[in-house]
Image (cartoon, rainbow, N blue to C red; front, top):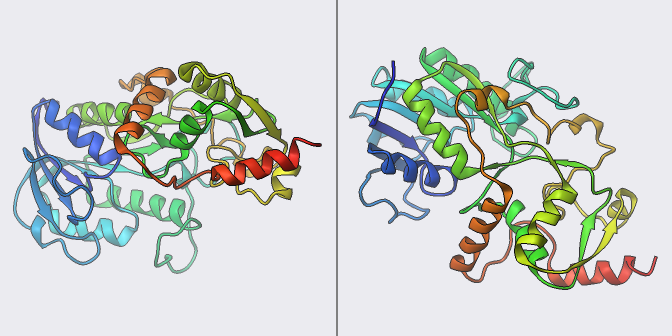
Length: 332
């Protein structure tokens, strides 16, 4: 069955990926209902219907209504999926669940595809979603989605980047490396990096809602190297920067945290995560996923940062810390 336009319920649609998704749905003529807590950007999308509540214990605002498709962007625990399914019942034609590549039991190999085994648990299900339990719980959510909704699509994105990103993992590098001067970057520079622009992911999710494919899809752009990433940023910014390149031993010595102080970087010695930035998304591309050039993502992010104004980055090191690292390691 193919749906062209129609009615859509978005569970969580005012922050990052959900914001992009609602923009694309409205732009494609969908009637959109956004379920959210009313805490983040509550005045967005006046043309949509807003229903307030919480995934934890307050779904009463969803007891009425029918939708051609529901997009679940805020399900982090299987209990939350169970509760949503109980309330929605058969009033949803198709269910699209956003999971994560972190649900895979192993990312030790390059080219992980959708047939790979997911994480599992023997014993009680963890009560809360933490950095350690996030992937496991997302995988368990997938199982509940399949149990409750015969017509469903599961999307497993890699790192999501772009406008509105609250994590600042991509944004930190775009802004920091656009500044003239000397900057700290990890070495070796040929380590892989992979992301997907939230706008591209959202556009494809609208197509998924129309086509209703059943099954799981990795969602990722092509792999590039960290050197390519750095060069793209400096080229777009027109800056001529110098770099202090820290190897893995120096990074450990400086107590810099991978993916936090050095966003989008994992140590090459972490063989269990060797394939984190090289997942296979050919199935999604074959079904219509199109990804923009990195220069376009960089441009969009830089414009958004200017519009956002002063902001303390959620990832990366401060300029003061970076200067300390430069003084410390440039003498070696």
